[in-house]
Image (cartoon, rainbow, N blue to C red; front, top):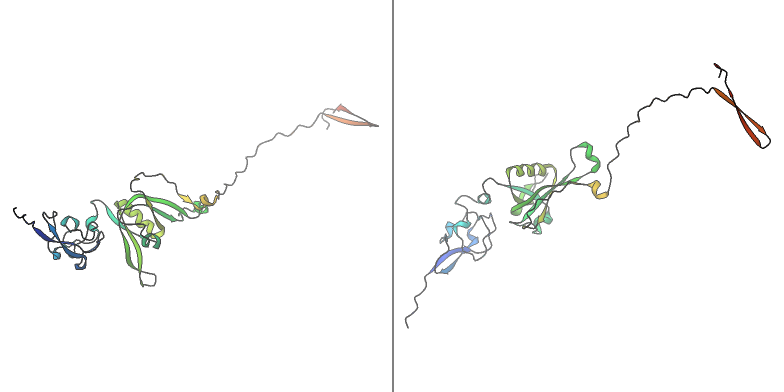
Length: 252
């Protein structure tokens, strides 16, 4: 029998560990694997061709690294993953949302803003919560270094959301004076719900103070004309009678 023809193999660059979206690839993130037969389209053969480039999608351990999964040379981070006409807006979240992993890239969230309305007439309602944005895609989630009030660096949980320029303005304004909360939603649920704002008075059943009642308008009342007669009551034992007499004209 004729000997089987050997299959050509090639060493290609692969991920040595999971590489998250937006990460800048370093030498420690890479390894090489052997592939028999045809290579994946755009496969990278030299590690130096992948180092210091940004991942525009998640790359899993052992997966060959191809050009279509990396940003161009000199373009790192999230910038290459942002579609044209959209923006990546960073939002600070609390420890529960960030550390517990409730929000990860690719998930969909609604953005809630809580605070006291500037309208003085509604102050009796207390703090209110309004659904600011709905069905927003999460680009990335992680930590960032910011300074506290004393100037000391501290780690804060940050989530980057994919929004339109108008939505980015709303988020920026709300983040400066209101508390921002993210709530998860089913990615298959794309319906935009009409949700009214909720106030403290709605939760505790406190009604709005009643408006002061207006004073009833004065009405002119006709004075009763003097009577033209008078009466005398006569009591005779248990019997009582009343006699009426006409008043002489001009006398009362």
